[in-house]
Length: 343
Image (cartoon, rainbow, N blue to C red; front, side, top):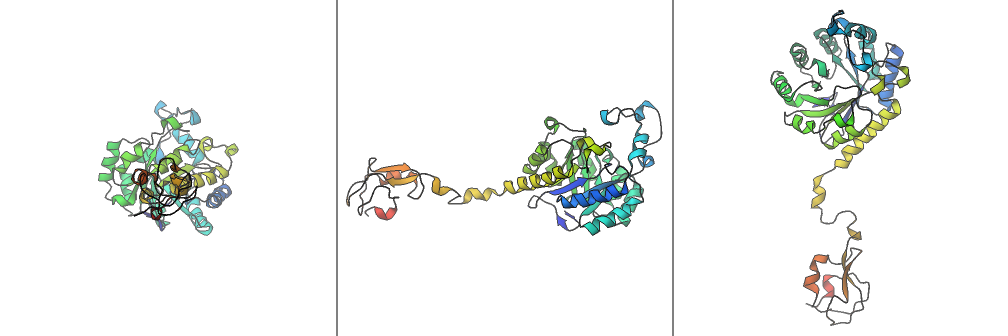
């Protein structure tokens, strides 16, 4: 899988996506600055959302349409989305600004018109939000572009995801599933990172869309094979906004990038176990002469010991050496070698 030429995979550093979400607060200058800051913090990409209130829901006061989640309780879906939606006319301008800054920008479309708009702007990848993963017409429309697809899994079962992938008509190597807990913020104890291993069985890239308040889940997910990380960020939580409470400030985003990449580097390779002499081997134990030995003297447990450091013969040879004869005089403190033995 590639996004704007960047290869995504377990043999590559994790791909870090800074989610602008609604933290632009409908301030164009702030949105542009967020793009610049995401680049400065080392993120690979910044993501926006392309929708209108009408593309997501209807203006209705029925109780079904009144939000009960604490962050947005009491508002109707329509009211919330109308207040926070990024103006559509910004989209092309922000794509251009991201190119000037040198960071990849892409978006989550929420209706088919948004897919068309993003395709016209040569978006390198499409992101499907958790709550839209069951919208087959939308997902198929995005998949039909032939661009890679990233899908959050926050409210989907394994069976639903398997069925979705079967119906995508997009090669699985062009799909990434982001494990997600759709709570805002999410608690570490609810992250269930073990789900990553199961998602891998679907034959796609896996990652994490993280709404928790620390980097713990991100580090753990990278250790478990996550190749993409998405995290909300804001210039300043004190600015407010519907997503501010679970968004990272710039210094925190910079730390997230470092932590995720350090975790990936720490995974390294199991081939280290095949090295005949690993780092630090000189501090291990080996066989040493611990009393002066004359030429022709027999090696015994009195004049040989297994001690640190590790410059002598390996301890596993001690039983083979005891009872044999010294070829030449050996001083106390000599690291025993095979040429010290007669025969």
